[in-house]
Image (cartoon, rainbow, N blue to C red):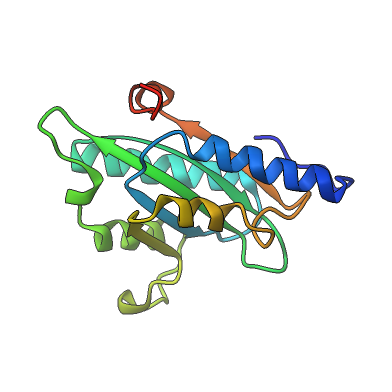
Length: 167
């Protein structure tokens, strides 16, 4: 992960948002996730994400891949935005999973048990029906504030490469 520079000019910031848009627009992602974080510690966020995806892949018998950013701004609650895709050898995709189950799992891992199941604000997972809108949302100024976001280490680069729009 590379933290962005506070000293970016407006033009540099715009260019970084454009590059991030192009970077995220290389695959046909299936899910858009927003994970609320317990704090702004990015290393801790990566650890939580690793636990969550390990449980996810094991229980769902599916390979996943994702790209995204972590937002550490005090203007918003620290959170992660991910674009995910997944598949297995039997044709299962992320459209076939129980999204509510994995929302609850994120809430469990972040120790936010006081949240009601009906109102999980820690995680939003929705099938991606308009990828352009989701990528634009991630790249908007509120999320990509210079010095207040980091790119999440992409997971499963092999699957991302196999499912690239250029293939």
